[in-house]
Length: 219
Image 1 (cartoon, helix red, strand yellow):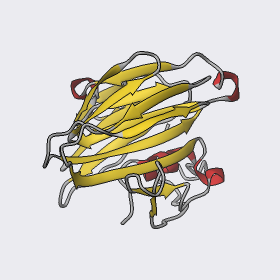
Image 2: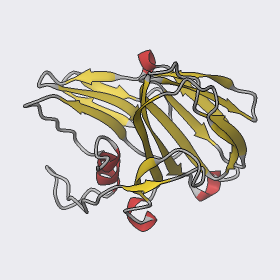
Image 3: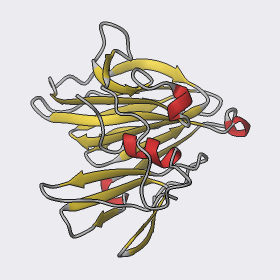
Image 4: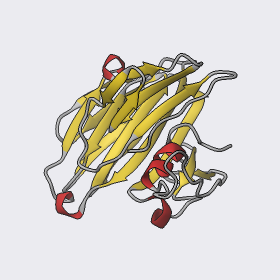
């Protein structure tokens, strides 16, 4: 299994070949590996990086975990409270729903298609997951984006973007693009993500149907 939907796209954008204005250089194709981010008794995820690709290649992207798709057991318990510091922690939910709470006092429930972006800066503790009705298929990604050195000790901040606020662009050729971060130019115009990041990145979720195709100009 290989997580290719949007995060290899992010990698390609970050490392696009300057000498190739129309296409991007494919740096590597690797199999994602199984990882247990909360310990051996915790949930299992598929991890393209850093398990399969080193940070020197993926920077400013530090980690990508794909959780699911799997049926929820109906439990309200998620990953226990744990700390983060010095990067952006981004969670994107493709299907299902999940709880979130943090030491800044935020708490709520993510919906399918929604996005949460924590700039953890000088430090934050949070808990995540659980809360999906039994039998609900939960599928999503968590990706860590490095912060510039000057911002690593900034005050932490939390942003939650509901599904309806994520820009969605249909190309008309069996492809829908959802812009999670950065900017995008398409035949329908110029688009910007709802949340402005401290690290300049472009993140797009491509959903390509049978016989479809997609193209995007690297920033």
